[in-house]
Amino acid sequence: MTGITVRVPAKLNLQLAVGPPRADGYHDLVTVFHAVSLFDQVTVEPAQRDGVTVTGEGADRVPADQDNLALRAVIALRAAVRNRRTGPGRVHVTIAKRIPVAAGLAGGSADAAAALVACNELWAAGLGQQRLGEIGATVGSDVAFALLGGTAVGRGRGEQLTPALAPATQYHWVLAFADGQLSTPAVYAALDRLRASRAAESAGSARPGVPADAGPGLDAALMAALRSGDAARVGQRLSNDLQPAAVSLFPALRKTLTAGLELGALGALVAGSGPTCVFLAANRERALELAVSLSGAGVCRSVARVSGPVPGAAVVSAG
Ligand code: C5P
Image 1: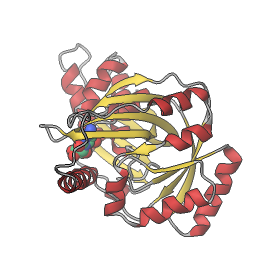
Image 2: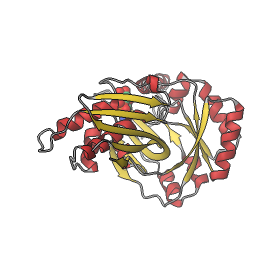
Image 3: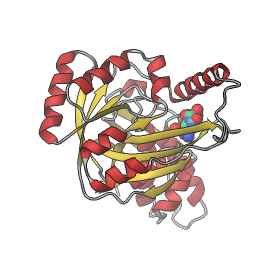
């Protein structure tokens, strides 16, 4: 066996509802994940020692040491299968990136998921997707979804997944990549600050009947829209609690979002913790028009057209 190559998609959050911070620093979420056709490719090969090489989009900003999420996933999987007969050897991981780094598209978690699938195969470890997801969740909140793909509801930190029963509709999206990055912990911290100052302002005027500890809830109207396959309805229900926080840290995003809507997008939102902006188009042709107009408007670094849902991490070649 020379190596295993796995292709893994980026994710969007069609809804991202965020609860208050937990004791462990994470936030409870309810999110609707949606995997789209923007893929990284990860190859693992037997090697003398563990290592990682990163090429492609934003490669110089991805750690190539033990902080690398794909390498951390390899180490976590090795620990989980250590006692089996087919001992897991050392590997070199090569990541060919197309998913921009720190862009709100879970590229790091995607690479970790791909490394898990590849090593599971290379080592003939035979772990199921559920177990790989549990191991992946120790590395990043979005790893389990990158294994599953499709459209799914995520709870907890995002690692507890239920596939969403959406029809076979393909949705056409335009992604506007920003000239800059946002740190996920910084965006969550900004949301906590925004909420704290809002709570301080409205102290004493709490609405009766609304429990202060009501957790985030799934948007039933979004789920109904997804079941209907009607892109216009889906576009109206896109929502992201992190968006005001991302925009407060990266004010130029407001202009990008407005431009996309003015150019005819059915809906617009910030991807995860940003700064990528996401626009839904009625069909493939409209997505092409929107992508061209957005590039011309000078409100982002570059654009990409993608569609979803697509499957999660999968082996594309083994040799
Ligand atoms: O799990 P992951 O490494 O992707 O999370 C990055 C950071 O994002 C966490 O350290 C935390 O600050 C924040 N986060 C959070 N609640 C979540 C997921 C992420 O606060 N559900």
